[in-house]
Length: 489
Image (cartoon, rainbow, N blue to C red; front, side):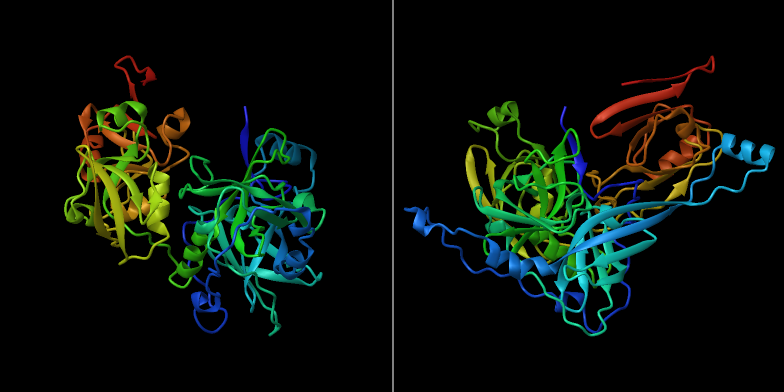
């Protein structure tokens, strides 16, 4: 079975993801967004060559301009995990020296997006690192500081102090203009061998369900991408950045010609959010599920294609526009919508306050409505609460979901209900291993719950069972009168 691998580098240890949307640190005059050049949207003329003499024989001119703006990133992290009981016993019994802290190292790539030292890379390359070193193509090295990161996007922004030196910058292209078959150029540091250039084509666009980030929308390419390429540049034939290389499908860790890159349009959204220290995506209050062959037939369509609306929040922009449960969303702002990941991408890449044209199918007819994106509301309040006492949820922290909190958690959650946020290591749920952060609590002690207040009221009575939902799969766990624990799905 093929496995998805993040290509951050030769990992000698796990690198923990940074917290969602870290705050911006000071460093440099003016806003970050103001330092990033606008996207290069020059139209591309695509012509099939009629003769060999019309073909470009070399990418060297493009590489010479762009390669200096791709950097190598080296990270180090001190392993602070406690020694095992056996190691501690041997040390005390035989007088061995205290174990020295282990240092985990990894490598990756990055792209210079600001001439004064702003560099973008993947969150999984630098997440949790105690030290970050950036090596430029001309062999200069600089320590780097993490400025902003978002684990949901798997993107991170670094800054190096160039002492006033101006660095080369890659032009940002518009990834939405990329087409299958377009030439791609990947630049990075695979396996630590040094800066390497590979070429290929755009194999697919709008890939979803990859499981790398919560905005599931990737450019797929067959340009060779390997461990160490993460955070590096995916360019078009004109040398414009169209993506940040992020992951590969691989059984052995090497390139099999299936690589994925975060589109440059999402990169631009991330950079614009750096000044605020938080990424807020547009919200329309619509939830849905991918259209299947059966649901398409019931909706009067001859084939699957679109998002079946299962719920619309009252008073939301979607409700105001007239979208109703049972509608099938076909396109948003001209982009096809086949699942929730594509819808989230379409909304995230447009600013709050922007009015989008939504084409939908209802009762055998297509119609178009205008929806104005709004910031997601935080109602009800999240009310993070740790459950105490002797119930089955003792030691578990739960919270109310809202559109804003669901977006912040970024794990494809619905916009209402009660979510598990944290589980203490001493909690029954941790010892028995039946609950995970992100699970939705649906019932406690056989009684349905819809808020933290409901959960606390029932656990105060010593509830011994619960029902939860994990990614659409429900399970019920509990302790019997005989004291035996069990779960059933």
